Image (cartoon, rainbow, N blue to C red; front, top):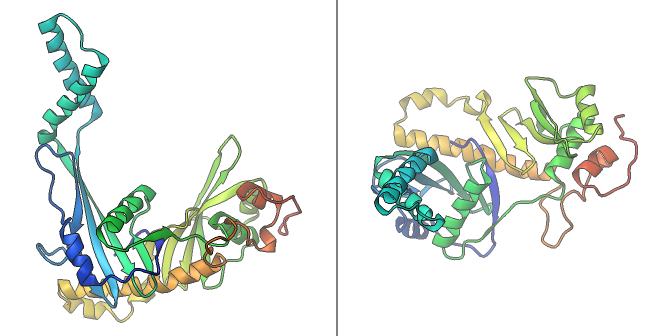
Length: 336
């Protein structure tokens, strides 16, 4: 049900019910693009049942689904049509259109082409955990996550959120884990990562299906490269790719999570399967997220210093600290 996670903290004052959210989202139910409409955005039924509810509640968790539909008109096609119109005007008037008129002609060309354009659709799942005061958006795109948040804040009275930040920055934490070969409690480091240099070269090293507890990886960190992505597994139950922006991507629930459910699944109808999938996904992730935040030193409290201040002693070398936070003088890295 969830493949990527961008996590927000909901303000403590919010107390809207699922029924109230349903009423507000109904005002922005998704409708396909009209003939001359370039983009349409709105809320869909999470279960995929036409004209069904826009809000589903499973084990106290609120589930939503956003649809974005956009007409696709290649810029080259718009330019060609614009040139055709401009040529007709020049033939009729004897002069070329000016810059201002050309801009208007591009808009005219786009308007003419929209009814013939193909559409592309993108669905984003949204999960609100009221007890934990978390909003989770199923996307690895920060711009898409911000689009979802904006729509929810506009639609739901009193709804306010902020991106979760941690005492230790993800980059410093990942450098520590890779540099020492020690993963945080309840997690293991898998066989994929990406490291980038912070100098003008902006060089990138990627490992895939490769051991990361090697001297080669440690030397990259010592030389000034900082981790931007590291593959991890939580309690042998959920694997994911952890990123520098505190996102979880490529989420996969491992076989142990589904033990004892396969036989029942074969007999489930579509509605029961939705409930089961939602309960499993939210049940696992609602435990994973707090443990990951704890591994990063906990959430950054309002008014606290910026990320990177709570750094384990092992990560306080010039190679890690200077490249990530640029805040302290060098001392020999403990793993050197």
